[in-house]
Image 1 (cartoon, helix red, strand yellow):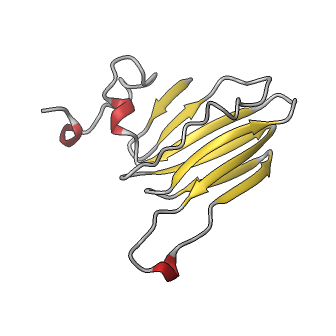
Image 2 (tube, rainbow, N blue to C red):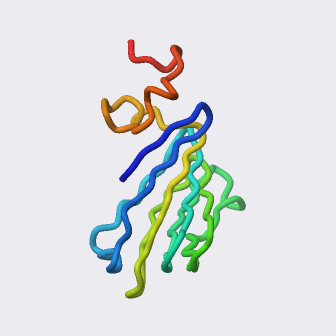
Image 3 (tube, rainbow, N blue to C red):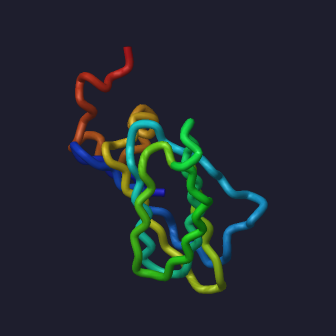
Length: 127
């Protein structure tokens, strides 16, 4: 992956893939403090989304399995459990966009390609 940061967003550019994602190796996760957009540049994907439950049963939603074709953009709000699955035999290419920038990625030395151009705000520095 190639990771870039600006003041208000972070972009993760994945290498092209030439085979579908192994359904036994999915990575469902959520983010408490930022949104994620998955921009599909080539190929087809299924974005699997699970909405958090609340105490009110009337607000519960069924899982969503959105089949998308390129180009497309799927927005994952914060707290929504999600994972994306490349499908089919065509070449796939995905770019993830995070708003605001991910602190966990930003804290890893050398991971952000343009860290010198967009340093982390002083308020986000480790203590």
